[in-house]
Length: 130
View (cartoon, rainbow, N blue to C red):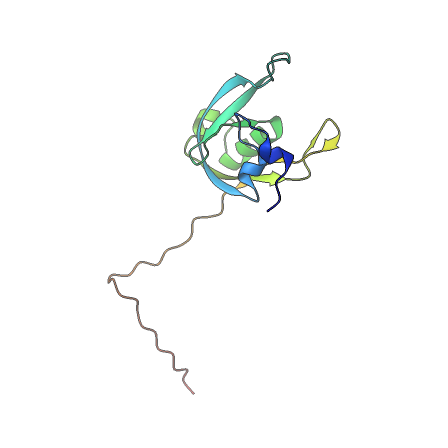
């Protein structure tokens, strides 16, 4: 197993390593918060909670616009309970440097389920007519 520096740095927010290639999440709540480090000037951003994550996610402008499109509304209150996928996109840049970051994509459609009137698996005829 290989450990990276990013995995060792503790954060009060969800990091790209926490979502990996994709994590299906449900939008829970949001608020404005100061996300600057203690020694930096104030920097307010929208911070969202997702039911499946322990830590909130800082939403940048790109992700806010993508979520508005996915959820069909620019009213953030209407996003509560909606699903999406958060994933680590290695091509995200910051300050002109490609550092990777969290991006948003549509949740996969729900899987169709076949319901049977009995608890047993139906039997199918395997013989192919000749």
